[in-house]
Length: 154
Length: 150
Image 1 (cartoon, helix red, strand yellow):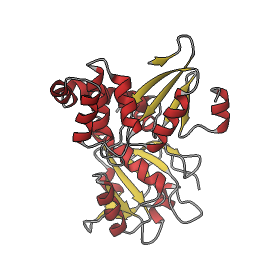
Image 2 (tube, chains in turn orange, red; image 1 turned 30 degrees about the horizontal axis):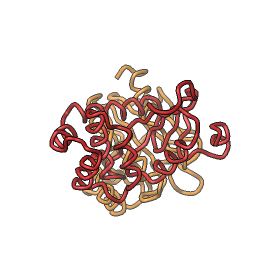
Image 3 (tube, chains in turn blue, yellow; image 1 turned 135 degrees about the vertical axis):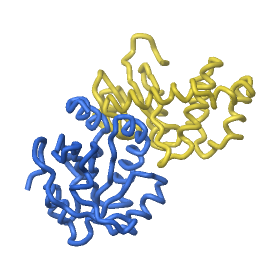
């Protein structure tokens, strides 16, 4: 299934947070959000990607954008990943039922992990922009996100 | 910018804690190229990269960017503050001024401007090279080295 596209409503989904909360499509309403789907915590490219986006967090905040990392790892693994990297980007776990949210967004890799993909959602709960890397090993530049923000006039 | 006038320009985005950057820089220097270096420090991967970039810019304010830059890449295992001061001293810089400058907001802004410019140009990892306006992420492959004469 293909990745959700601009103009589509955000699908229904449910993800888990380390704090023990459930994060759903309703939590995306009211602000611009970028969901950063990444294959695996601690894998090399994901490490670089999270570190790199963290470096730009103040620029994203200045645009009123919140980032979340999404993977099929358990919340404990995601938290350990955050602590190891020293990053503050929130993490959402698609652990059980595994990959259900990724499937809803059309970014579940046949191997059972998220494709490396970015989905930007608007305050009204509609997809503003999406991007799937040509391969999971490719790190999408943050310029893609800023260009999409410019295009969406956010 | 350094290298032969009129030679092909290569812009390198790198950080001083990145071993691949050091290796690439070393090889590029042996070629007939003009080289520009821009800072792309990512702190959570390389905790000392930002401090090192600011140190190089502080050295630049005393006319010693490239010697300081080379001294950083030549010894990436020593990037703590005392090592940064020692390099400044060895290069004959005013160390007190160097130390004030490297912590100044002007220098931090300069490094940030490089980083943001890189982001805008699609840089996401180090090293990234720009050759004839085209972006090459990661270590150059054999074809790129051949094109650069190396």
